[in-house]
Length: 162
Image (cartoon, rainbow, N blue to C red; front, side, top):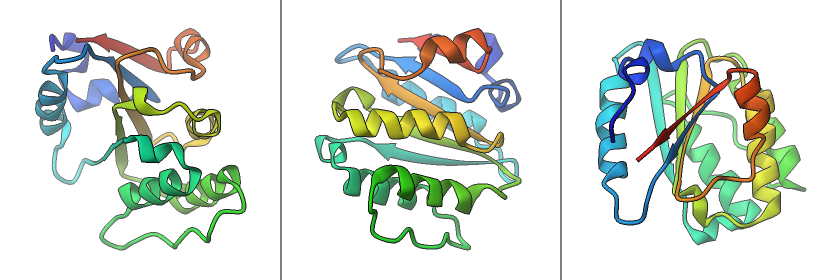
Protein backbone atom coordinates (compact mmCIF):
# COMPACT_ATOMS: atom_id res chain seq x y z
CA UNK A 1 0.00 0.00 0.00
CA UNK A 2 1.49 3.27 -1.03
CA UNK A 3 0.48 5.48 1.87
CA UNK A 4 0.14 9.15 1.02
CA UNK A 5 2.59 11.24 3.02
CA UNK A 6 -0.31 12.95 4.74
CA UNK A 7 -1.27 9.67 6.45
CA UNK A 8 2.10 8.30 7.50
CA UNK A 9 1.96 9.89 10.95
CA UNK A 10 -0.92 9.48 13.35
CA UNK A 11 -1.24 13.25 13.82
CA UNK A 12 -2.14 13.47 10.12
CA UNK A 13 -4.92 10.90 10.51
CA UNK A 14 -6.65 12.43 13.52
CA UNK A 15 -8.57 15.16 11.65
CA UNK A 16 -10.59 12.49 9.82
CA UNK A 17 -13.68 10.66 11.09
CA UNK A 18 -13.28 7.98 8.40
CA UNK A 19 -10.26 6.49 6.69
CA UNK A 20 -11.56 4.24 3.90
CA UNK A 21 -9.06 1.72 2.54
CA UNK A 22 -10.21 0.05 -0.67
CA UNK A 23 -8.47 -3.28 -1.27
CA UNK A 24 -8.40 -5.84 -4.08
CA UNK A 25 -8.81 -9.60 -3.63
CA UNK A 26 -5.44 -11.14 -2.94
CA UNK A 27 -3.77 -7.80 -2.22
CA UNK A 28 -1.40 -7.46 0.68
CA UNK A 29 -3.35 -4.44 1.90
CA UNK A 30 -4.18 -6.01 5.26
CA UNK A 31 -0.48 -6.63 5.97
CA UNK A 32 0.26 -3.05 5.00
CA UNK A 33 -2.63 -1.88 7.21
CA UNK A 34 -1.01 -3.68 10.13
CA UNK A 35 2.28 -1.87 9.49
CA UNK A 36 0.48 1.45 9.20
CA UNK A 37 -1.42 0.86 12.44
CA UNK A 38 1.85 0.00 14.17
CA UNK A 39 3.28 3.33 12.98
CA UNK A 40 0.20 5.16 14.28
CA UNK A 41 0.20 3.33 17.61
CA UNK A 42 2.26 5.70 19.72
CA UNK A 43 1.99 4.53 23.36
CA UNK A 44 0.01 6.94 25.51
CA UNK A 45 -1.22 8.85 22.46
CA UNK A 46 -3.75 6.66 20.75
CA UNK A 47 -5.62 3.39 21.23
CA UNK A 48 -6.32 1.05 18.33
CA UNK A 49 -8.98 -1.65 18.19
CA UNK A 50 -9.56 -4.02 15.27
CA UNK A 51 -12.68 -5.96 14.38
CA UNK A 52 -12.27 -8.42 11.51
CA UNK A 53 -15.78 -8.68 10.09
CA UNK A 54 -17.23 -12.00 8.98
CA UNK A 55 -20.57 -13.02 7.49
CA UNK A 56 -21.86 -13.63 11.04
CA UNK A 57 -21.60 -9.88 11.67
CA UNK A 58 -24.65 -9.38 9.45
CA UNK A 59 -26.53 -10.33 12.63
CA UNK A 60 -27.23 -7.18 14.70
CA UNK A 61 -26.63 -9.07 17.97
CA UNK A 62 -23.25 -10.39 16.83
CA UNK A 63 -22.22 -7.04 15.37
CA UNK A 64 -23.00 -4.97 18.48
CA UNK A 65 -21.50 -7.58 20.79
CA UNK A 66 -18.20 -7.68 18.90
CA UNK A 67 -18.18 -3.89 18.42
CA UNK A 68 -18.53 -3.48 22.17
CA UNK A 69 -15.71 -5.96 22.75
CA UNK A 70 -13.49 -4.02 20.33
CA UNK A 71 -14.08 -0.85 22.35
CA UNK A 72 -13.21 -2.49 25.67
CA UNK A 73 -10.45 -0.78 27.55
CA UNK A 74 -8.49 -2.05 30.56
CA UNK A 75 -11.00 -0.21 32.77
CA UNK A 76 -13.84 -1.78 30.80
CA UNK A 77 -17.08 -0.37 29.51
CA UNK A 78 -20.50 -0.86 30.98
CA UNK A 79 -22.19 -3.82 29.36
CA UNK A 80 -24.69 -3.04 26.66
CA UNK A 81 -27.94 -4.69 27.64
CA UNK A 82 -29.44 -7.17 25.19
CA UNK A 83 -30.54 -5.03 22.29
CA UNK A 84 -34.16 -4.23 21.75
CA UNK A 85 -32.81 -2.95 18.46
CA UNK A 86 -29.38 -2.23 17.04
CA UNK A 87 -29.78 1.55 17.03
CA UNK A 88 -30.59 1.70 20.76
CA UNK A 89 -27.64 -0.56 21.58
CA UNK A 90 -25.32 1.59 19.50
CA UNK A 91 -26.53 4.74 21.28
CA UNK A 92 -25.77 3.09 24.64
CA UNK A 93 -22.31 2.15 23.36
CA UNK A 94 -21.66 5.69 22.05
CA UNK A 95 -22.75 7.16 25.39
CA UNK A 96 -20.27 4.90 27.16
CA UNK A 97 -17.36 6.28 25.06
CA UNK A 98 -18.49 9.91 24.91
CA UNK A 99 -16.04 10.92 27.63
CA UNK A 100 -12.98 9.36 26.02
CA UNK A 101 -10.18 11.89 25.97
CA UNK A 102 -7.54 9.73 24.36
CA UNK A 103 -7.75 9.37 20.57
CA UNK A 104 -9.06 6.00 19.48
CA UNK A 105 -8.94 4.30 16.09
CA UNK A 106 -11.53 1.60 15.45
CA UNK A 107 -10.72 -0.61 12.46
CA UNK A 108 -13.51 -2.54 10.73
CA UNK A 109 -11.77 -4.94 8.36
CA UNK A 110 -13.47 -6.73 5.44
CA UNK A 111 -16.53 -4.48 5.43
CA UNK A 112 -17.47 -5.94 2.03
CA UNK A 113 -18.87 -9.04 3.82
CA UNK A 114 -21.60 -6.90 5.40
CA UNK A 115 -24.85 -6.93 3.42
CA UNK A 116 -27.42 -6.23 6.13
CA UNK A 117 -29.02 -2.82 5.69
CA UNK A 118 -29.43 -2.57 9.46
CA UNK A 119 -25.65 -2.85 9.96
CA UNK A 120 -24.94 -0.21 7.31
CA UNK A 121 -27.42 2.10 9.06
CA UNK A 122 -25.71 1.44 12.39
CA UNK A 123 -22.25 2.26 10.99
CA UNK A 124 -23.68 5.44 9.43
CA UNK A 125 -25.09 6.37 12.83
CA UNK A 126 -21.71 5.66 14.38
CA UNK A 127 -20.03 7.98 11.87
CA UNK A 128 -22.59 10.72 12.58
CA UNK A 129 -22.42 10.60 16.36
CA UNK A 130 -19.08 9.21 17.46
CA UNK A 131 -17.04 11.60 19.62
CA UNK A 132 -14.34 13.63 17.84
CA UNK A 133 -11.57 11.55 19.42
CA UNK A 134 -12.80 8.36 17.72
CA UNK A 135 -11.72 7.64 14.16
CA UNK A 136 -13.05 4.82 12.02
CA UNK A 137 -10.87 2.89 9.55
CA UNK A 138 -12.80 0.67 7.15
CA UNK A 139 -11.21 -1.78 4.74
CA UNK A 140 -13.38 -3.06 1.93
CA UNK A 141 -13.18 -4.52 -1.58
CA UNK A 142 -16.19 -2.49 -2.70
CA UNK A 143 -17.50 0.95 -1.81
CA UNK A 144 -19.60 0.66 1.36
CA UNK A 145 -23.15 2.04 1.34
CA UNK A 146 -22.30 4.75 3.86
CA UNK A 147 -22.58 8.57 3.68
CA UNK A 148 -19.26 8.79 1.82
CA UNK A 149 -20.18 11.84 -0.34
CA UNK A 150 -21.25 13.85 2.70
CA UNK A 151 -18.04 12.99 4.57
CA UNK A 152 -15.95 13.91 1.51
CA UNK A 153 -17.63 17.29 1.14
CA UNK A 154 -17.09 18.02 4.83
CA UNK A 155 -13.42 16.90 4.55
CA UNK A 156 -14.09 14.31 7.26
CA UNK A 157 -12.68 11.35 5.36
CA UNK A 158 -9.78 10.21 3.28
CA UNK A 159 -9.64 7.26 0.91
CA UNK A 160 -6.71 5.00 0.08
CA UNK A 161 -6.67 2.44 -2.72
CA UNK A 162 -4.49 -0.65 -2.47
